[in-house]
Length: 225
Length: 363
Image (cartoon, rainbow over all chains, first blue to last red; front, side, top):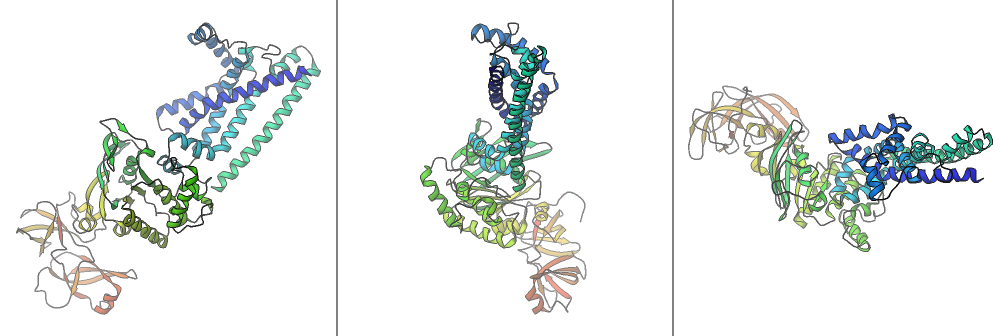
């Protein structure tokens, strides 16, 4: 059973970490893209879509170069901080996050765009910007933010190309559900591949169900206001 | 209480204005796109002027050359726009106390209750904005803007979406607040009637510039230019030539008719063209012979019935200008204007106002 549970655990770990990274990086980016008139925001919007058009293996390849000794950042990470990202689950989580963040940003930005400008102006004259964000923007855009998180989580969970290039498929360490299915299939272990795919299906079903409920809430909310 | 100089460019629009507001209601009046809302937003700190200085109370909240730019929530002013913009996920009470971050949580409900009571909304604490009527929501929005204790209030056409009865009761509410609290309100509107009803001081804006500022009646009676007169609903805009100028009196020729005027802007000299204006409600209808000063024989050629008043269009019988005259419905009946069409129009010299001539074709 651990042949199924272990990859599932690693997948969930990577997806959770990847989603958190998406939230941390994607939320401010989505806010700027949705609200700023500056030219930089347009550039950011375009750049944020890049991982979507690149093959995931290409994203993985670039990250491999970035995390390795060939790049200044990689040297700094390895030599000064002692952080080795290649062939580790944090590396895989970063790879999954990079691939998923365009979807997170798009979804969150759509939610931010719907927040009434006049409401923001009124709020800004009353309280500090961080309060405006957490007590006005987040409560009003939460269905979109929840949807963004779920989409990012789902994308992280299914991520194969970029993670496998960065972190390979080390059993018990970086072998995710998709990687395990790929390996089982190559090895001709149909029974295991089948069980793994079933696990992916079950998790996926729960996710899609939650996502649908969240989106319906969003639609109902916008219909009311 | 408020002293602002602002200069900013947004695309093709160029704003460069100076506005002052003391206790009372200062109306910022102008046509759409004249920069009224932009001015409020710049004072509030939502827009950032390229140059300028904004002083509220005795605090400099913005000074481009000194690098001072306080964020909106620290400028100590209240703001309310066209729509109430209440936070839909919070109750009326929580909306009102939203800006009271320094008041202990336990006291906030009391503050909200006091404001709701003042605005005739006692018992509405737990109501959601979606369940409030337009007028109720706008009152909550005003309470929210005032609850932090600000003395300066910026209002951007706050009654635009409401019907006339509600508008009137909210205007009375504002007047009461000004009396009781000594608030300084900067009120934006493009509605001439509203401007007249509310203003103590009037600032006329056009294309990003202040054309004239002063006490309401002075601006209405003595516009500084033809454009101001036009914006203030100027009918009876006339072209004339100065014939003579004494210490306190101007003799002018208006299309061959001689008149005196005791009020003028600028420095008109004999021989120079001037624009003149007289408000339609200031023209007096008389019977008798045209021997007096500023009397023009004329005939009613058209009239409009507005219910409470009538606007009469007069054509001169001899040389002179065409004029429109506003008469309340009752005097209209008493004078028998319905049957009698020939009148002498008296233009009191104090109400006929001369201005520097506008460029452009004669009208």
